[in-house]
Amino acid sequence: MAFWSSTSVFTSKVPRKILFMFTLSLSVTYLFYSLMSCYNSFQFQENYVYQGRLVTEETTFVTLREKLYSTSSQVYLDEEFVERTATEQTIVISSVRNSVEIDERTAGWVRAQAATTRSAAAAAAGEPPEFSTTDSELRRAVNCTSDYGVKKLPQAIIIGVKKGGTRALLEALRVHPDVRAVGNEPHFFDRNYEKGLDWYRELMPSTLEGQITMEKTPSYFVTNSAPKRIHSMARDIKLIIVVRNPVTRAISDYTQTLSKRPEIPTFEVLAFKNRTLGLIDASWSALRIGIYALHLESWMQYFPLSQMHFVSGERLIVDPAGEMAKVQDFLGLKRIVTDKHFYFNKTKGFPCLKKPEDSSTPRCLGKSKGRTHPKIDPDVIRRLHKFYKPFNMMFYQMTGQNFQWELEEDGNSPGSRD
Image (tube, rainbow, N blue to C red):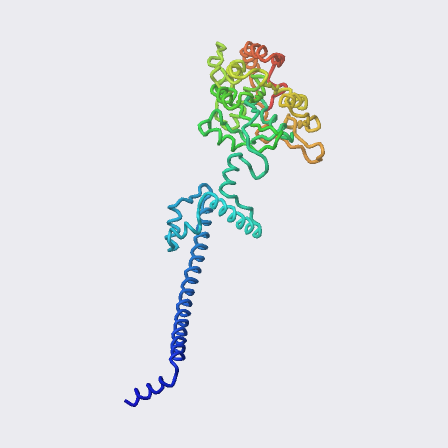
């Protein structure tokens, strides 16, 4: 009773208006602190979510970049890949789509940014820069190479003949700054045709504008399918054929085989089916190659003579500069390879190459060139000349050139070396 009586006395003495304001202020204060507490809690959660989202998006970007450069051939940026990445990073797929938006433009931007970062890092480490997938595809399309230039299919081919002097001609041509040639024989049109033109092109050296790409494979001349195949690749290609007295050429061919297989029969035995009757074995490859008119006939079905140039193997030895002048004219090249580039080696019996401004030792062909021919029975040589004479006459008529092989009475001039 005392409490209620004292309270009634207090309320009777304090105005109701003041009591209301006091109660209101307490309520507002309580509400304020409650709101502050909620706000701090909300802000903490929002920052946590925002920071978590930044971490996951950054991780996702790094993952995308690593995936992009994990292979140089393909880039997968489809929804399935994004979903897998999102799952691995435990983020909501929709959030990743909204924040990362991997469309074509974004993918391009990602590749560009990643390429810039990687190139800078590689440059700092002293490593060669890597190319983006787009750049790699472009480089493959134009066949760009590291030594500058573009790989092209040949514009000229030395198609024959074996043991005629094709290696000497090719090495002399390679001295010319506007000629780029394959060192080894590709054998594309006779042995490797099924590998395709892309494989063939990759064998070629890179060339700059104005340079000629060349190769030489002497067996093309006697391959029946080669003319059609080369014609289907390039109808306007230029063909070079180095020919030599077919008798001397056959002996040179035999000499090469003998150096590899000493057990083979003598030249005389292989050259005749029946020596007593004088029946020559024209099926022996060493002799069949020398029937030039027969092989040329196949080539003339696809190419005009204006696209062929015939080099005399004998004159290439005694006058290399003169023959090289004709070849350079045929190829549309400036006459840069001249007599200053040749030095005749009496030991090998062949001219060697040298640089006019260089005083170093002239560069000669390898040990496989310049072998001394075995002594052949003069009667066999005479019979072979008689055998080849009608074919030679036909060849002279077809080419419009007289190589004067009938003036040679034996196999010891001027090419009695391999």
